[in-house]
Length: 457
Ligand code: SF4
Image (cartoon, rainbow, N blue to C red; front, top):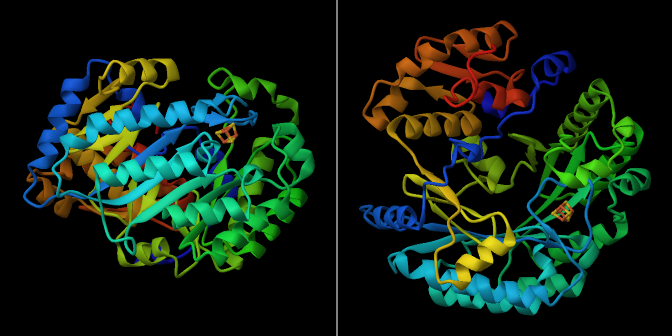
């Protein structure tokens, strides 16, 4: 199958096609969510999800927005504070939200995935996290610990071996660490000073504790980044042998993300240098035996994601790639997004709004969307493209009880433009992303996005 091969890096192709655009952790994407979607709509979606013939498993996402200092490249929803007392107060509200939402799900629905993201989840401290996970376990039915994924994003600057031991004791079996770049010059420019030894200590502690998966995040395109410095970072990261490595592009959008205004644009690499940094990462990671999963993610060949990629069992949701099929995702905490039955619901992004809703005993819904038939069809199509690199439109149509070939015909002019550059192969009823197109997967997916501005292909 096509996806077993490695992506082919072509700087010229990337320069022409790579534009900021959706990453399709959802379709439709979050900007399409409407404030008309409210608490009643979320309750109705949960009720519909309970009516499935077989109880559908649940994934839980918990957002912890606090960080103690701002990284200047950050585009996350976070609140900068050194006031650790905010942790327990936040945890109590998380528990209130769980008390509101958990009873709405049928009791036989099993939690197979729990993820803490942020912000910095370990801002909470292990006692708070343990108390909250305990409450989650009392309100939801958790599956067998051997199969459930409990994962948490960790800031290594605020964690040590004892922290990791505590988290393992709570049940966490996967961790994800931000690295970005170990080059001190870059770290100064982005206000994130984090030594390689402290990061390695956390990785080694996690491995010694038998954590099932360790992920490290890198970013290319940061100020003062050079091929030499980033190359060194790649070597250091590869030497730690994490199961998974994500390599994200930095997008400089200072109007959208205030923290980025503190980055000096004259220190950013040129577009060509930025692409070369990606090329360096792809080359080094593949040479070190990592497999490209898709959308910035690499994994060791026997990591579950790599196995799922080969066998066709890969899925994608707001948390990225996963092996868990067909779960309903329940987002808890400020800004968290849920995907339940045929609906998306997002909690208020601003902390005071989320707090006010929870304090008033309301399900905190800011905006959302019930997917129509066309949305569901396109969501399935984009998911398949992102995970398998190939879509059979006859099969897709059969699953939805419609003729899906119309979608292929509609996207044909855009797809053919990409085909001329060797990025896709379009046949009468299939589309396949080639090795040349794999690093530009989201550009291919965008051909099927009904909400994007009309054709520029
Ligand atoms: S990058 Fe992570 S740690 Fe840094 S400010 Fe953003 S959320 Fe916090």
